[in-house]
Length: 339
Image 1 (spheres, rainbow, N blue to C red):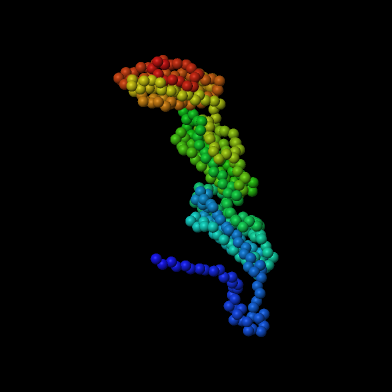
Image 2: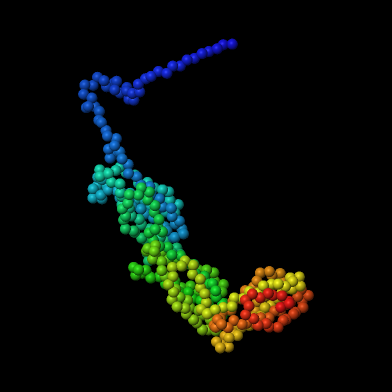
């Protein structure tokens, strides 16, 4: 068996970076002619940097590009003025960096301006397709380009809500926007019983100038028409209701034995002789139905709420059982062969 023993002793030495150069030039008589002393805190070595980001959903607002121009220093002083342009587009939204050496005045502020260019073929409407914003001065080293802070984007969802389509044939909705600067836009929409929600997308000069007006024209099945008053709003969800003073919102709830019933017909009558208003409606329920069936009857006189209903049952044995008309003011009605 062999044992080996190694010993290492720490040795103190002088660390002299670039010491070899000093040794090689030791014979120079006038060293100041060969060396220049540099102040590393000189403005030349101070970097002025601004990170520019544009976290924008371009497609949502119909934006084609956002252009940013940055100016550092006095534009009239060519030696101390720096300029850069950045363009952000769909698919080209990576963060950019404006980086220059600080000028002799050690300025920490800069000026920037933004241009927005929008797609004329998008659903958004406005008084212009290009907007150039006034230049702003800031010291913010992280510049966020956000069109929602500079412009307004008003998106109004218009939909039919509480409407008795048994009386109304169609509704024309008229929306109007008047800008404080003078320009205006109008939008017309037509609704029938099967029309889905419609949208009005408006690009505004200022994010807080969001007030618009609207009114509706109702075309009734008897050929007459009614018009609502003009209403001011800032809502982004606009429900369209009918003009009647009240309504009967009826719910017919299936309570019958599905094994014995194939079909149920529900006849509903409403009469208002004073206003020459009469309604005859028929609803249907299949034997397997469990959800209530609804009926809305608009009222010209909200105090007159009495109506009549009658059930006609078709059994699984094909027998027909028709009941008598029942007068009531109840809005929840159970449907059973015992009614």
